Each structure stands twice: as C-alpha cells, then as structure tokens.
Length: 115
Length: 110
Image (cartoon, rainbow over all chains, first blue to last red):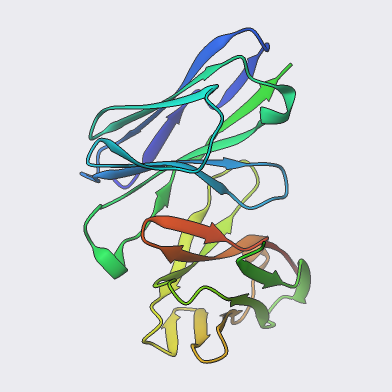
C-alpha cells in the first residue's frame, strides 16, 4: 500500500462552519504534512508532524488547527475560514528517518470552497 | 522571495520530442531536489529526485541534470508522449520543508 488517502475529496463550507479534513496512510511513515495549493500555483507547506509531534508550523492562521492522533492519521480542523482560504489541501507523508533519501508521497487532496 | 525559480511557465512539445524544464536556487542548505508531476485534480506524484553530490540521474525517459556550482538543475523528458501532458514542479528541500518552483505546464501534441 503506497497510498495517502484524503477525505473528503470536495468540501463546501460557510465562513461560520467548523469542518475537518482527514488523511490516512498505512506505509509506516512517521512524518506527515499539510500543504495548501491555490489554482495554478505550487503547493505551500503549512504544517509538518514528525513522530506525532508538530515540528514545523509555517505561520499558518489559527483558524487552521492540525492534529495527529496517531502515526497513521492526520487531521486539519477548520473554523471561521475566509473565502481566500479556498484551495486544494494536500496531505503528504514520508518515512521520517531516511535523511537525504527521504521521499514525500502526496494524497489527491481535498478541494475546499469557502462561501 | 522566490527560493526556487522555474522556467518556462509553459511548454509545447511535439510527440517524440525532448521536453526541458529548468530550475535555479539560491539556498545552499537545500540537500535534495525532487521533481513532481501533477495532473488536474490530483496530488503531485514524485517523478525523480537527485542529491547535490550527483551530477546526473536517469530513470527511463526522465533525466535530471544537476550543476551545483551554478545552483541549477533541469529535467529532461526524452521521447515525450501525450500522456506526459501535465504540470511539472521542481522542488528543493531543507530539513523537512520542501520549497516548490512555480510549475511548468507541459503540453505534448500528437
């Protein structure tokens, strides 16, 4: 199994809603990531978890709240989002201790629209 | 500040031709340089990657050339096929953070 599975594939939410994005991998990877990708732009790093601990937070607004319940799961909790937060949210994972040979695997993403 | 500069923004190649995409970087702390292929509605998929102590890496029709002194690297797609039509991103890694180039939209015409 070399997949990173993200649910839901599409999400429409209002600015007052609370929703969560989910990500799962069963490759035994110990590093998991959230990226944000706007249309026709490259992915931008949001958060990195290493061994279930938050190791990188790229100055992301607090309306985005990540959670790593265990080594296979990664959530992104959304609250009071703005229309400009509409984007493709990508989850990724990597082995965690391969050093220079570390490879990053992406899921297909959740296309989020904030109305 | 754009840490990884990618060109061209778009590229049209005839079937069987060679596609060449270039990237340049400034940060000498980058230690890993992957290329990703992305189809519409999908996440990026790792295509090929290189470390800075290697000057060239080839996997099938895909080759990375790396020039450490010039801080440049490029992707060559030999015998380009219509199925290669996608957006290609170069990237560079420092610790666990990948920085992506702006992307190249490749169209291979039959």
